[in-house]
Image (tube, rainbow, N blue to C red; front, side, top):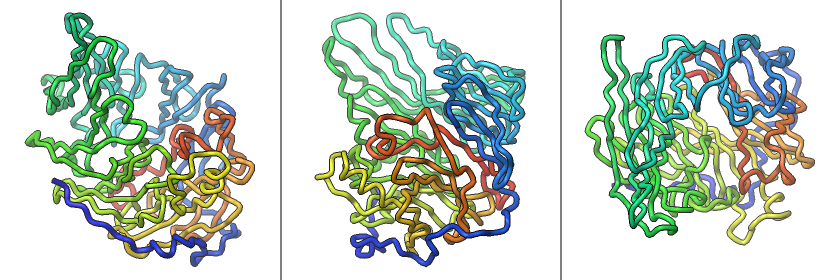
Length: 458
């Protein structure tokens, strides 16, 4: 059982929350930073690239309807979606091709794991060469089978995924959901080893009735590769978060985690493995409204602890570890409370979001941004830990991408006019109950994996 602990290192500060930290609040003129890699971002429906901080923007796709750019580990390729079609393209705009299914990059080389439309899983090079069948397509008589949530292990030797089967005939709708692990062959002469490592009890319901539990949602691996983290859905509860389960991969034994109400593991940016070890930062607290009941917590699956790092007076999201694992950047605002359901009150509350940082143990919590003209979100560290990239929204919902030094100074806009058209709605500031999926419209390549202090660079 996971043991809970609570910290309130800056609760009284954030109740009043002036956010007047030891930083200037204004962009300053600084010498250009070096070695910041390159940014891929969606502008008016296409992907543009920019070497940071001062490179000239270059457009590499045409036709619009593009989203979710993801860099390969080498920075030579991009995976993205064109409408509902997954595609890859070189960073110079050449050798574009469509994929038959969804795909994810390997952690340290330019290989793709592709979950094809026939439910088979194939690993292939970025250019499509050297395909290796890992898991054959599902063929179960009298049932439909879906696979989802494909995740590479940190060492690139295994793939975790979920599998759900539903009976297509009979007096009841039988549902079987499981978590599977495929160990990749180390040579062409070997066969992949594929096994189911967790299956909850099968669930039955009457025809037409919603199931009481119907899917496994993979969330990620622990940094040391010793555990897979996942959630079990039961009908519509995924909208308000999922209880968190941790499976030790070696012994296939389950660690039950008990976040409150439960954990809000709704978005990839709310789940942050540390650069090494077993720690994972999550957003703890149920409910779909991101402006209330959200705290940063740190899970140690090996020790069996889940420790809250921020105060209940705050709504905190988007944790991001520094490359050396000693600090966390995150987004914080005063908790708006359950009375705020949306509208102008929610917009005013969200406008108070700023970038904060703390030491890994929860101490030294302080604001890095404090400009009242902006709502600040989605912090990311440079490979050497010297700078943080983040997104700003002004009062007119205009977006821009900025960098600053890791102590909050030397702020500068690197993409002053950022129009991620695929996110635009009638209420661009709202997103999904206050969460905007910036990771669907931008990705930062910070150098090859391991280039800075052993930390992954993407």
